[in-house]
Image (cartoon, rainbow, N blue to C red; front, side, top):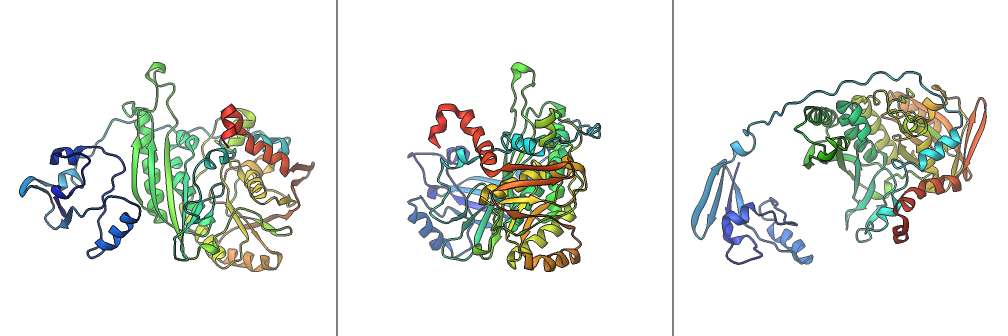
Length: 457
């Protein structure tokens, strides 16, 4: 296709601007959109409601050229293909990131309660409430799930529909293995949308990396994009927009202060009925807690290994994209039918942190009383991918397990919800941590970091 623009009709902040200035200026807060023919008045009404400029400045053609007209003259007429589909690809020299060695001498957790409190207070897991409460997160009163869960949910005003919105990335995974890290960033966004009951629709991104002139950094970019692309194709989860932020390092340190590769992912999904969305909060005592998905007790590159033992070793967890797709579809169906009462995907900190976050969101605790297959550390702090924690009522348990089996999924009951504490029944004894202690640890990091400014919260 092509495009023809009438430059005289472009809204201008100053008089006497030339087409050159209009086309190349980097003015902020300007949007260009293509409307269906006949919808111009509908769009204009929305713009006028919010006191925004609106102008029809051209139309799409079938010429394959960009034509600019100004004061009756054609001031530009150029082919679009060399600027887009046929543009030369930029192939900067790059070196693939070596695969990390397998994790050896794997430690064990000697106090699950103490380890959990330490993780809940760590910067990767600590509550972001201090940040998001300082902004308008209610969006005209249409926000039905606030930040703090897997995805925010916002009603589409005047309808039953809801939009689910999430952002995700695990930079330490991308640093250890860019391909797997890129896959995981997309897969976790997918998972977070599924966990609230939304059908994942599309992705945007912000690709944050250090200096691409360094072959090893360019290798991180190439690897992450390869993994992201593989995941998007497998999950039918297209990237529709995005940007980049490069050279995030300091010359003074010879690149020693380079940021970790961070392809930040924003995902959006759709709920046909926002009132059926699921939250991470436990809904009542006595519900059965189920780990849904394959588990392996993967501790490589885990938060637990880093925070408790000071080790950043091993490969990140592998992502099985076909399993992600199957499990996500099952979760969405179970949420839509009302079978699941709470749902949370497992990510940083593993099963123990997932349970703690669900408990804190509700003020309801849990007892984990079933034998665990991968030792204490692997079972509770392993960061296996494609895994969800869900709760179902007693009377729904049998039907849920049968449905999961028919879908080819592993569903392991691990415990049930109780009053205001977490209890882990292990072979060597019981470990208990109160929700009050968990909340103090979880909420304390950002206020302590910001010092006097914490009063803003």
